[in-house]
Image 1: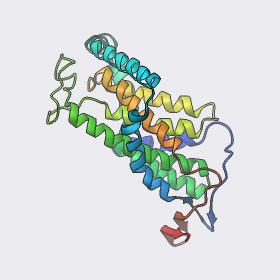
Image 2: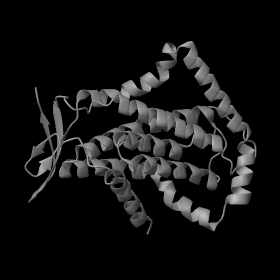
Image 3: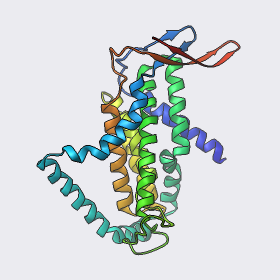
Image 4: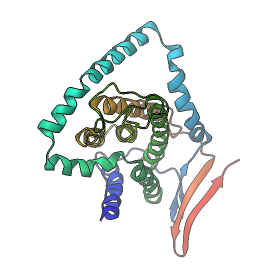
Length: 282
């Protein structure tokens, strides 16, 4: 039953984020018989390094105004953290019920990397086969954003070593590197917003996709508070990390009209032939 549920959710991610809204303005990049392909330029792979590098080193180029904004964000995050215990009590004592648990069970998987990575790969295949350039690009960028955000989140978790709320009432219990718990920040919230932001930006001209994507991501983040697996500050800051990675991934995307493709990865489906072919242009 769990496998069927996860398969349905994975397929839903692709269908929900690719079908609604206006007609697509972008055209397929390549058609070859029964296979469609999308250019994977060298910049796509280089961005796996460039994006986290820019996020980490960007403060070096900040203006005084940028530092002021960062200070406000930091103060807001500190304020949320100081209210973590109150939020926990409200979520567990006043809000949680069988209904909220059921809702959390269905929304939680949208932040599970074990489901999201295959969903992005599936989205790429569906987009390539159907000739949907936009879905193919969104899936590739979603995969990239998810991978980068997941890596950064694991680093933060290892450094912070924050104890989960289901094990302590002390919201300031940070054990640091080597700690046994990894509550800060929420991986589910980070993953959900990393993918949702990319799809929302790729389908920015749709009336449906952006609110749908961010709505699912928000419910995913909420599910971790409902389940008492994360403090509110964990999910808020995790969502922020995912959002920033998603925005930068979209901004640095090499998949723009007019780009000259030099590498194609093509799913081959038809007759007795099934597999992947790689074409290169020199």
